[in-house]
Image (cartoon, rainbow, N blue to C red; front, side, top):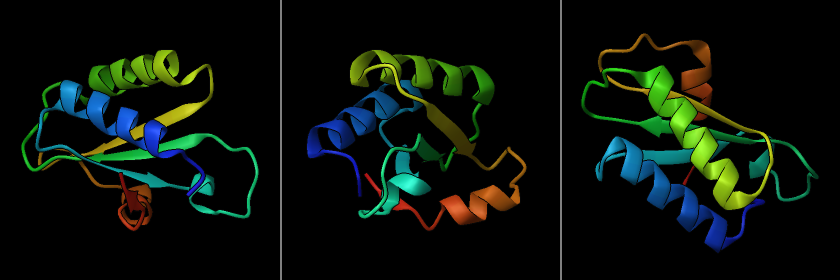
Length: 98
């Protein structure tokens, strides 16, 4: 995983602030490859409860993480019981839990 422990802890803490303490966040995509270089930070937020405005919450998380981690590309997708799952959700679910 190409994130420092401090970065992973920051991502997890801010995710829980926005989505609640039960939120699980996973890193997926190119940053899971230890031998790779660069790449954006792709995150899946998994929730066991419905979310009312996933788009706004995702945008808020991206903005707060960009301020905390520095200006870099961050993509967030959300999985919740009231949201339709897409093929990317299945791929992301195999990511690394932070």
